[in-house]
Length: 150
Image 1 (cartoon, rainbow, N blue to C red):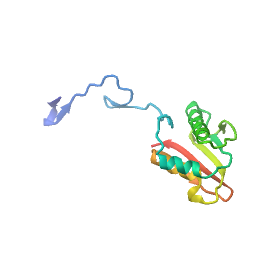
Image 2 (tube, rainbow, N blue to C red):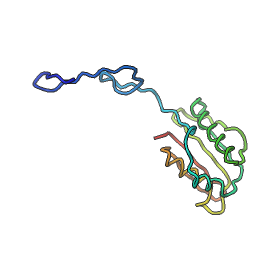
Image 3 (cartoon, rainbow, N blue to C red):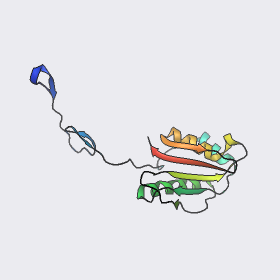
Image 4 (cartoon, rainbow, N blue to C red):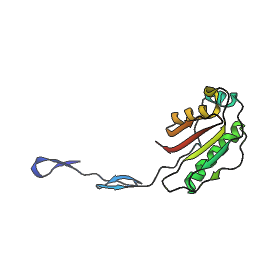
């Protein structure tokens, strides 16, 4: 509803019910970082084929922060790796870092052909899903670093 306010300026009245975040009555309510997750996401058949096409050395997964959200997100990667048939060294490790670091690290010995490396394929898929992800190739070991979800 619009009313004429002082000096002929339109004044809008907004009512909000059941709102859990956002701008309410000129006040910003911060609900924290959104939870990241892989559950319920569809992997296209072509990507799934690429993820399974090249054998991968045992994978190590590390959560950079001990908070519950980061630990749960790391567990999603463990679940994904085991569903793909990738050997995983152990349940996700935990590294104590400052509260500003909430990333996940996935590492494996580098594949012979970089474009076929399963970690590169996974990084490209994650980027397509809206994650802040970086593929870090190296001579001996490749790594994916997954940060916040955009």
